[in-house]
Length: 305
Image (tube, rainbow, N blue to C red):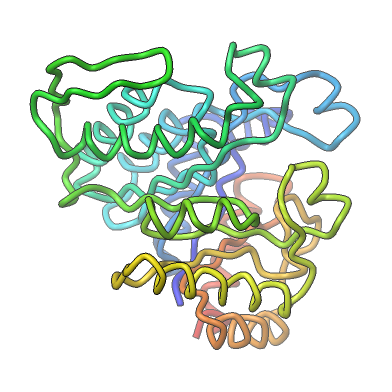
């Protein structure tokens, strides 16, 4: 089991504590020193005021900007987007940003992506909300091709490459891992067919309806979705293992309480038995120093073993 810790770069209400270059570097170094495997950041380039005010939404630093400061401050920590909304950007711009980050970091990027769910944000960015799933499938093919092919010819939805080459190439070969988010069967098929990992999230019915995905309410629901992923992999002849990165039940992003070590270890054992290979952790913190202290305590108490 490996662990990715959220950097609170979405806490723009306390930018001086969590958003400055110095704060990002300090927090990233604390995660690395505590023995965790990765950090992750979120993606909301232009959320509506209503989403922030009424639905508990948030802003966030640009993920590639935030993770570039992490890369400069650390040596081994993986750099995860969790998640990057693919339809918000031309896929070749996404490919170039991720390849650049992977190159300068020495091969540490994990590109976590999903279709997105905020219709207002789609409209503000000129992105096609109704066509987002088809765009995701197409974009993943375009990104992978841009990372690996010279003189690329690719016909997309509103864009076209007619003999183009991306430089620099990613440091990882053949390319950085792509993890696909979403609980629906379509998202699972996308992960199995076009990705290297799957990013499900715990979601009761109300939350699932809001983010336009399927509910995962408990371990039985997760077990059922994992069985579907394995069955689809067998159906299409996929032999490569699929990483599965999950937010442990009871440790949702934005929780106000941190994990209790004994219960945390029990949850990790249950998830590992199901086939989960990575978990994401969000730690509450009032300041960047508080964040670093909590990371050090969780890393030092044996919770990850």
